[in-house]
Length: 271
Image (cartoon, rainbow, N blue to C red; front, side):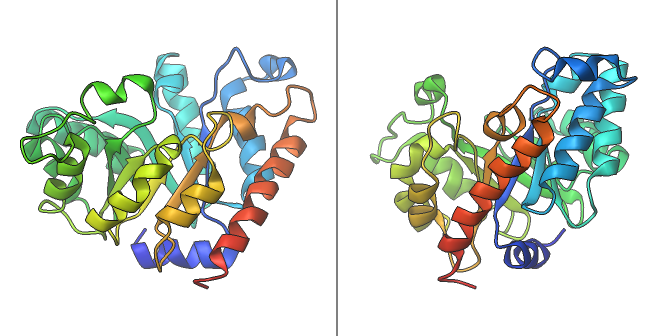
């Protein structure tokens, strides 16, 4: 999917909502456990309920690979079920030496046909480049995360006073354009978005942490939006685990619709 195609979906739906499919077998409604494939059945119903409002889905790969072969089968069925016009993100946080990264890229872009993958930048350019060799596929590079330990490295000061995450944003733009590179910025780091937008004004930002983690959609939108939206705001637990009864999908739809309605207000200034 191209940047223009993604923006077209955002305009068409009045939404920049990404639904995280962090599907935990211990948290899905109990009545689904009797299904042949409980993980896929849960995802299927969540997708059916939220596809009107979501422009992206982000399966967290760990929740599937923990189940071995069956988990990978559930993941593949999920990806095959997501409508073609909705952006897909493999939240895999890969990153290794070049030949290993090439195999990771083939796995997620060729075998599974994801549109994008999250990648850790710690090993530098040669660990990221293999993911950038696929046409109309995206790298979403970890830049400034919202977990408490993120500050251990990301916020360390360099000799010129800049922080490490700022150098990640700056240097990685030598590797790829805003047509193939996005950045992860945690919603609880909304105060940094103004600075981030001075460094990367045109790139899409994947912003997790809205909802259950306490991030503010209003602040993220105010400081992070650019003239092509430039945001994919993820909500996982706040949507998919909003209800644990047999009515879970309907409640998920209501929660997704609430976020979409708020997003549509912030989009009015650009569409």
